[in-house]
Length: 332
Image (cartoon, rainbow, N blue to C red; front, side, top):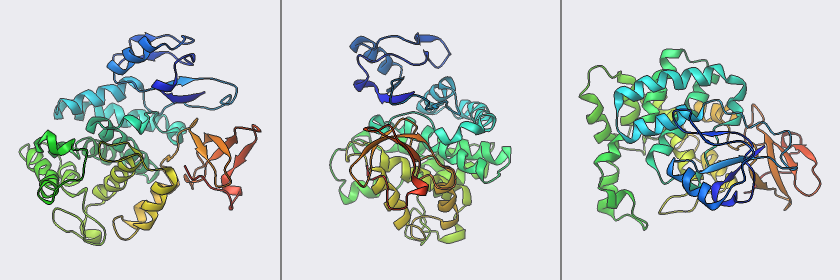
């Protein structure tokens, strides 16, 4: 099985049942996808579809988190419903812990549509908690990490929509306004004494850079709260691979290069190493281009180096472990 952008799936057949955030069946398995179905699914916030063809036979796309939990997390963030986010985070973390065997699959949301702050925040939370699980964090720490990641951009709700969605380059004045969202987020959360300081620190510090060049306080190195450093990496990764009003999505190659080039500059080097070892950069079924010009699809992420997955060549159906092919790499 593999996932396709929903607009590219017309004429294909669904490989699994598609449900809404309450688990109600929307589209049954083996249904032929039509334009009407595509439009209907978009109304439910579903932007990719699982199909099965000869090329993708044997690929496991089992998600570590259920579609219901994902969609409920989106709606809670959209509503700025902090109590509901705390409730959902417990189930969110428990599903990721229970489904550890599938963490390497990631969650199948195609970033082509990630203009949405809510989608971005849930993606960041999944990657951050995945990293935390592999670092051996306890449940309390994972729950706080999940909530903090979901709420890390809550301060953007105070930024004018015309600035948030501006398609061109921000003016200096607009950029200074945008940079205030961590402070706004902290102020919004700090009003509630029941919200852990950990969660507030993530919202406040997720744009602080390892070398002190970040904002809003210019914190440096280990003065930055550790969980905020984790969210910072996951935040930048998801932003890079996602299409935005002001930019195209980065290629995988350029994204990996950017993260590595900013080790010890933007990012905590210790957490960045764990990110590349354990957080799925690719999704099973992704179509990729190799450095020799060949087309392939991703079969499975390779633990301990997520930048070099196991792939299947499109033209020969040959399976290749990129970890065993040092001269071959994915460029897009």
